[in-house]
Image 1 (cartoon, rainbow, N blue to C red):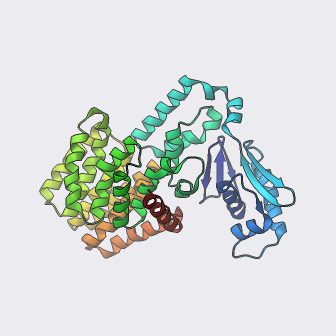
Image 2 (cartoon, helix red, strand yellow):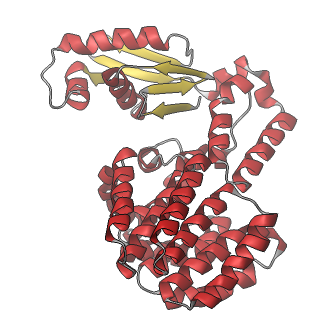
Length: 385
């Protein structure tokens, strides 16, 4: 059963239905959902959900009562009372879903759904992927293992990626390293990238993507742009193979960013931009890449002193990335802007705008409170191998 939590609007979406909750009802449900299957006493729930308040134990009972009434239409959720102790949240397992929807066992339907997910993935339509995932129980299909993890990455659910017990850490490691890349210090992120590559901790496809694409930006942000440009030669050799043709737009955009960081002359950057616009994005109009390119082009305008045009392009790019639904990529674009501001601090007010936006987005998605646990987990895991 796939459940989406909208922290901004206090909504819970599952089985094609959306339930609106009051703020404290949402906080209580979110805590129980993050710890589903575990039983908590009233005192523990008061401590976790009302930490700075002084409610009575009856407050928990009242909120549980209201939650049960509002969630009654979601048959897969059970708020269980453990007599003499407290409460726990149970979520229906997949076996019961199969009984409700026989199509879950239909291989042809499941393959077609996987194909649709693949198309949305290719075109960078993260919101489309999430919308399809939310309808899993209604449409009656089995979410492929890859996408059952990937959708959490797309929506920036770092807490799930860190703490879930549903899938092994090895299946989440790639996404955790990527999350650190847009949240942590570049030098640490580079070290983590190199360690997972040296220790071969990733699946082959993820290993290759980290090696030829993800690490390029990290090199640049860590002050090793020459090493990134050197690695880029290997990247272009590999993506010349047919299986990697969809990498071409991303790699070209990254190349343009690397040359901006390097300080390459405008004439050479103009050639890269022309290639992106006339070749890459014309034949492969992927939403992620369109947004990313607008941001990088905006940085180019910023370097040239065209503040007004730069701001227009940066805002357009971030808006496209917001529409794409790929939270990590939007955060990474904000990080690119933040880093670039230190190289070419020509417009302090404009750059402050995006620096503040980056910090607000960290707070909005709960990233700031998770960076410490993320680094602790990375150190523990990588140093123990």
